[in-house]
Image 1 (spheres, rainbow, N blue to C red):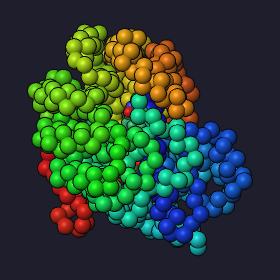
Image 2: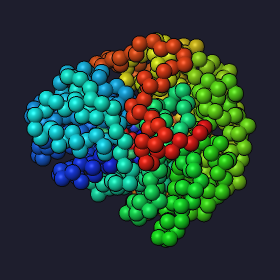
Image 3: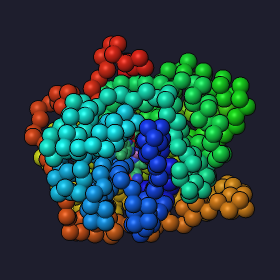
Image 4: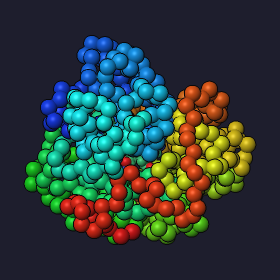
Length: 491
Ligand code: B12
Ligand code: SF4
């Protein structure tokens, strides 16, 4: 739902995986189904007849779609190797294989640049032993844990995506994406970013980042890091390389309130370089909520960070997690609080994703096992209000907050920008302004629960708190020295 309105971004992970396969000598094409239709995909298969098809499956909500596409693929090309990889595929590998009933040959867990090339090499011969490879899981069994990729070897294959003008975030239209670091050293209970990367934190070399940036044609750049500029000196080093090359872009990034306050100077420096938009995961406005999410931040830190960002003149968006337990009064408190600050406020619904601590402890309470509802806009845990009333409150709150920025008076400020974009033929931002009510709609949200469910999510064995972390990790924590780029930054 979110990506139908506010943004659509290039699939950076898939481009990196594509480049790793190309470097290994394969002829590679990429199709992005955010932009292309299933029919385009079918046509590509029929005309090009690839030997291997690799699905990027970062988002849990896309699992049924990918399973159905895999089944269609095997019917068209029975001899092909069908693979799935990505964030969500890594946490649900065994059940995906089961749902696909043989249409997916294997799942590659972890980082695709490290996992896919050896798999393609091995698949040239006898396919029986593929499960012996690191990170690979087939119906016959599972190999050793996945290995870390070297972040400075592959630059994303941006030339493989034909519809680059379709990628945008708000007024950064068009926008490309770039990665400076990978992983997160914090351990919030609702998040699977840290469990995927074994709580590691790695940096790309500033020269490599500048080279990557220099190849980007788009004026807007979305920095995909979970928490940007945890280490100030890395941010400064990247900035110096950018200045040295004379690169000028408009940037969007996401970070934490405490990091913003700790590293004020680096954010000030990046404002000069072109930083315009920032997303802060505030999550809760009370200490109890922050403690439950294990955010390791206080409300006063969050408020101070917002003030600092304002003083820089950066447009800030924040997120608040709505708990299914909320009643009308709690929604009203959030509305009041959010209307009192100038920032853009986004509301998501607390959703236990596989790979998170909350999934390990709360899966027994799930009211739905339909993957498609796990998009943080639907309630999959019991609601205190009747479900219809919960959605009414949620959408009403989103509408009120949205009006704050997209209402007619607010639009006066963006009218010039919109006109400039239209003059350049970029329509993504302008279209987004009119779509909110058709996409965010309580009746539609409620109706989504009544759809027939072809594939049911598998539940984990109940876990005690605290959850044993080894059970959650995809990539194992690198320990003190085993990987040259692994830096442990304490929360
Ligand atoms: C950037 C980002 C976005 C961008 C998406 C850009 C895009 N088109 O991909 C935007 C802002 C649109 C977005 C939106 C959402 N996001 Co998001 N997002 C991220 C973020 C911060 C970084 C992803 C990224 O680009 N990483 C860098 C690249 C290089 O890594 P990668 O994509 O993971 O790819 C690597 C591996 O996954 C793997 N891989 C990927 N594809 C393939 C394919 C094959 C075949 C193989 C073998 C391997 C492989 O190899 C790649 C290279 O190492 C992650 C957090 C994270 N650390 O992963 C969250 C994350 C993926 N998002 C998340 C969520 C919840 C959402 C939203 C639902 C939230 C929201 N309302 O905003 C929406 C849903 C969007 C949708 N399409 O349904 C969750 C995923 C939860 C889940 N399990 O489904 C994550 C993990 C954040 C979190 N803290 O929990 N997101
Ligand atoms: S700080 Fe952000 S990325 Fe890191 S664990 Fe918490 S929510 Fe996830």
